Image 1 (cartoon, helix red, strand yellow):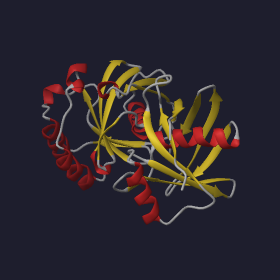
Image 2 (tube, one colour; image 1 turned 45 degrees about the vertical axis):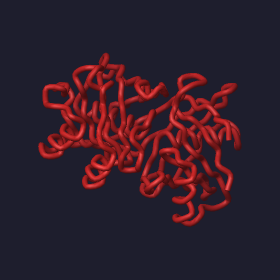
Image 3 (cartoon, helix red, strand yellow; image 1 turned 30 degrees about the vertical axis):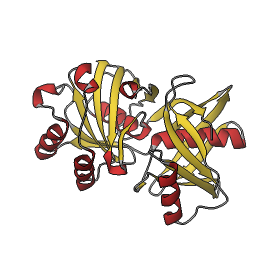
Image 4 (cartoon, one colour; image 1 turned 60 degrees about the horizontal axis):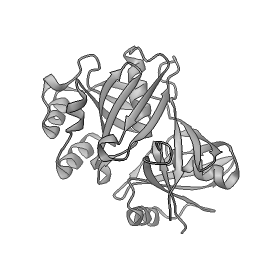
Length: 277
């Protein structure tokens, strides 16, 4: 089984979040995909096979299947552009139909996905209290302009927005405790965010549910955050730019375009660089 290794949402020819991509004539059994994802060791590996007019896709972290993964979708878009030529590729996920597009640009590939529909709801007090305890934050660390929420764009993410970049920089938590917390609530990641301006955010994404301490670029969580900002009428001006992975030494850049229709898909774009096998 050949695995392409592609860093999605790169900062030029550096940074980005590595993903595995396997494209074959059919999808292997789930146990085989899970074992291969664990062997690859990246936060996610996307498996794709031809299906009607597009591609059937499933995503696996080293420990579990996830319903949607943004950075692995961007990596898949890059891989399909390299294999099939530039284009827009329809994807059928476990519970949604989306698209990804890829366009070759020299040593990198520009790629963009259309997320599943978005929705959000306020996080309950118990969830917020436990999350703050997990990271060692307190209420005063939170930015009151963007209240804690459960945001969805194909998967659930807890959003906690911090008052300062310094608080974000010092994020730390216990992986086992984080895994139990996320799994108990059906969360794929927790988005910790700092709003530098209304249109520019810095984020970090613990991914303990998948056995990964932190993701350097998270397209699904970016789409969920963007949908939530629309829900609360944040002055996003139609798009937000996100810097992620900076505190890991893997600076990544993501852009989310936010149409006005509540609940509609978010377009998340960036570049992808091909890694050595």
